[in-house]
Length: 420
Image: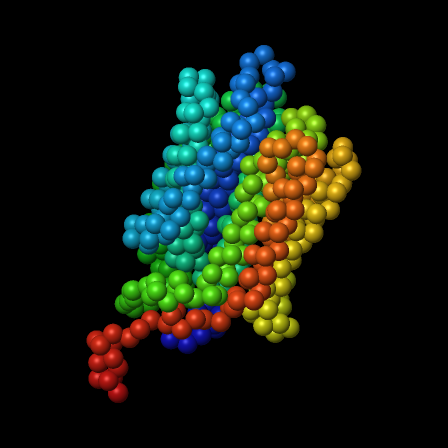
């Protein structure tokens, strides 16, 4: 088909329905991550024995509750991608946000009625349905976002996750102080329900299925994505994919980043409370700083990547490896510095944590209360960051792999022969 340029496919003037979809998906990411992290702040207040009513949960029980979200989350990751392709992103992401919202509304009652076990069930179900979030986002972006606008619009959508974490952590302390910890879940549930109604009215799986989009905008998106005419589907070469070192390098790098990011996201408020001794409101503010920095830095770092590639200062592969190294080895060094920071030095600890997350990673924290035990955890996390990124450097590439090229069928070969 050739390269589609601005001259051959002019962009419609002003804002369009694709921008409305971008806004809705941004909010979906934001709300999903607020509900992903709300328990991390709520559990600090739920287990505070200074309150008139609190849950006497041990540290091990709290750890089980905080981790239970991810038990359900990992189950549907791969199937969710295939489900999104078959049924479209709209129904699945609607299910994800609406179910998470209903569970958020019900979770305070579950805690009062049946204690931590039913809370774990609720969190598992939330994780189970949030497994749809990223596969649906990938699918919907592939349908809605033109190639000429993919850098900016995709960054806006995905950055909603980091902003959602920051907003949740920042506001949760104030909400809990005003309305109790239950208010954290009720606020998330109501906002998620409002988004669900809006998305059911305005959202669509693709430009072709939208009720509100103009023909001009549909054609612009189709031409940009090469979707004009009949689209063919090819079987995935799973054997070649699973034996590809570049594929596993990407997996290793992503797992290394997730190791720190998700554990910090769930555990940092407890670390702030139990180890650094900050109150609930300050806890929320300080815990939000790393994610605010990550959200802010995602835009200039994305722009820097595009500039380096566009100016051909480095190859695409080298650029990806450079920024992945910054994102993983930078936090590894920061964690080592954090492990040796003087006990009780709140400013230095917050700076180290903010540096770790701000450059696109996180710190690994658990339930251990002795400084020497925390040091072991930080060193383990540093090792994970270092070796997963080393594997990425050695084997990752941005070059298209042979197995990504569709294998021609006998019918397509015959068609070509007839054309010649």
